[in-house]
Amino acid sequence: MKASLRWLMRHGRQPWAILVLAAVASVDSLLPMMPAEVLAVALFVLQPTRVRLVFVMFAVAAALSALLLALVVSGATAVASQIDSGASLMGTTAGPGWERAKALVQTWGAPVLAFSALFPDSPRTSIVVATLAGLPPLTITAWVLVGKLVLYGVLAWGVVRLPQWSRSVRWSQGSIGSRLQRMNRRLLALRRLLSRAPPSSTPTWQEKPP
Image 1 (cartoon, rainbow, N blue to C red):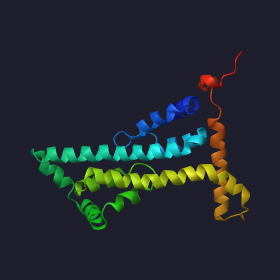
Image 2 (cartoon, rainbow, N blue to C red):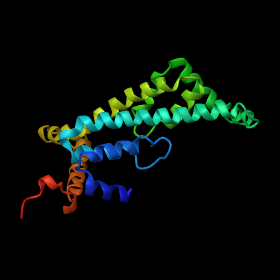
Image 3 (tube, rainbow, N blue to C red):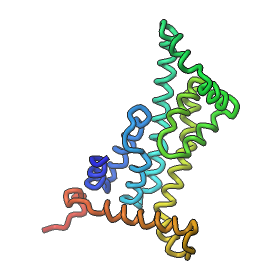
């Protein structure tokens, strides 16, 4: 995480940083690293003029990550069913917990994936359960995309609007507003931290002539 933050402070204002970090987020379901939402919020702060691009790119990356995991699980299940270990694999997923989760997906359908994608981090468990329940990988991908578009849209709105909104409204102590004010102070502190980038991160077209 420290290495990722140093990289953000050094290169986070570059336009290509969005593509690099979105590519990293696209394998989050297979190789868990720093939560993709943390990277997205940092980019919202560092590149406020590209907020829409950031939240769309990260939502697409989350959908691609879900597709990769669904393909891996479906492929592993198909291979396991052809060998002797297939019986033991199916036995481990036939417990009451798995059966309840599969029944939930089969009852409510793919929208369960969109709901699970509304929360931070990758909905790995929901994707695995939906794949074992028989949902096609493309259907899983589409519903995860819907949920992540909502999540990143809310995060983008909060980063952009919360500071101005919390300053324009007076809240009583001990209310929800005081919590929003604390969130605002933390966001401002994050902005100050990320603004302390070394000079080498300044794009060449912004450098002043000697």
